[in-house]
Length: 423
Image 1 (tube, rainbow, N blue to C red):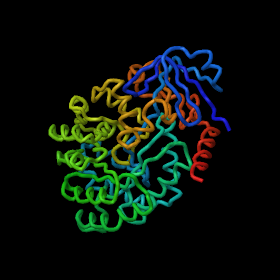
Image 2: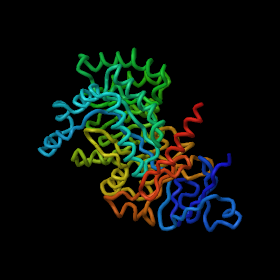
Image 3: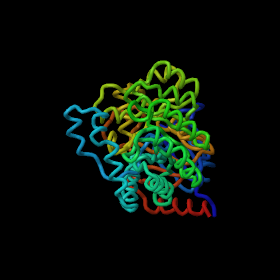
Image 4: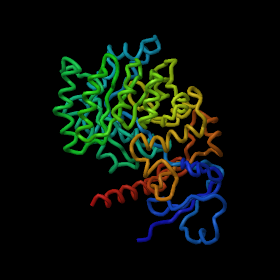
């Protein structure tokens, strides 16, 4: 059966391709892949070769947005913490009262159907806001049964909705109450959980919450080195609250990414630049936690660090599926330019999940993951803040969001092609 060939016209195509980042012209896609991106007007020969032409000439076309840091699977919510936050309680003060531990209790109590329904609802919201690929962490089970159940659910979800999911095992998110110390729990992770997760191929990455009073530097190193020996790629929650040196640890171990980084040192910024470790910054989290400090994005870029942005969707410090909120915060709080922001949620976000050879750019041979903003330029997209600017989304060539609404037929076609690829 012949693959459908489509032509998209736009005066504002942000390709995220360093060789040709902005194009006033058109792009061609056939089946799941991009055929070409060119400036100017398509020839008569090109026009005759396509089955469909889409006119987005007053809109901005860019690669599908990539969210490289989310905590997708969890039970319950934590709106009860809002009063504490408004009264001035810090993240770590709330953590002592409940925080992650309260979500662990609710996640352990939740049924698989409840967790599935909750995750699907969030993924639908992400899609409507332009996200096409999501990194999804476990980490709210912290026991064998719930962590494995969470990771198995992450593996199942691409068969039920449009987004691709990149699975991360975050067993080292907190120390559960049944363990006496972080070191004892680290033994459990290293000796029992890492081999089980690897055996079932449930995660590509292992992440660690490297933070003072949670997993200190040497315990984090021990878990990270064991994960690397098992064949996992590494991510590290680093220097979010205290300047512990987690970013330097990530660089030393050539982790794919270090994440948060509000308290990173200048020395570790340069270590990350030298190692190629991506900085995944989470400005919506700083905003939601009502802290003054945002990660020093400009300093990182000037040092040559690869900078990505993510939503940090989670129940306690960023209950927001909308990656555009992180983009707005990056502009108005971190002072990043529209172009820097679009790179951070496309090309650099793809690098942060080791998918930079397939997604994150509008480039020949890449997957046809495309987000269309109802904005005539990247500058207008960030200027007109606080709304959902997405009008259309393509996932692997399927037009899954049309005029702000999910196309159930296109999603069904996408899911059928995924099932066919697995057979």
